[in-house]
Length: 297
Image 1 (cartoon, rainbow, N blue to C red):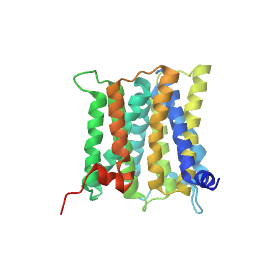
Image 2: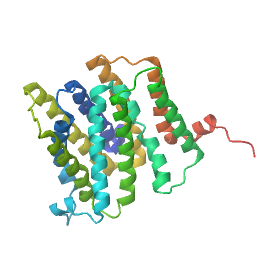
Image 3: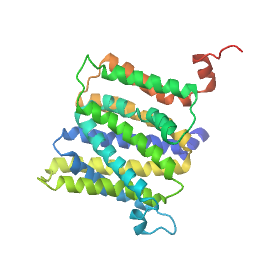
Image 4: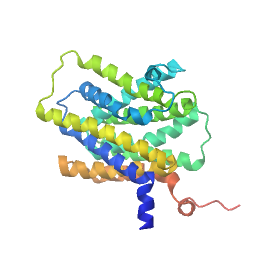
């Protein structure tokens, strides 16, 4: 009982629930089958993100801090990346089986490694580079260029992973120079403004059933973000990072049960390689020694 209580009291339980909510939110996107344009979905999702604003608030914060950054250039860059990330995610899940979309989006941890070297001048060991190479082998296995068509959904999923990695690296670069509420403002207000402007021409309101699904998408995403906030307060990021791969299980399960997605054997192999590459640095050291024997001195 003590172990169960410790688990529930840790951020891991909240993180697992958060990623389940994220997956269900993505399932709502797929359920719409493109009947609601990405800009409308983006606007509703961004607007409801303000539900988590009280969790971001700290003593001394003011509403004007949402749009008053110390570094305007990085504020706009963060807003632009967040906008691309949101639209790319919606397009990916609208066009691909859920498991396949997640597989390509999960390139993000590997892309973070590359961007950290290029822009943060971080040093990366051989094991990390091995994980990057393994991850890209997994992507090639999923896509199999020359053997299958690569469509807008595949491009959007990879762009989602790349923009997500960019957001993470930018956050590490600016986290000590900006208030948390200011970073939140960039990540929410920019996508909301762009979505609003894009959806105005030819706006068609969703029907009743589409409103239900759109509301599910937006509310589940807001709930997931709230749960992740609680998780990050209870556990360090290194403990929470592996839980994101639970989304892959949700993607396979929801895709099969709700949408009849059929993923071939090679795609499963690619998914396995990508997940293993992402989880590589969290494996126990004794496992790593067995997988990569140390050369004799």
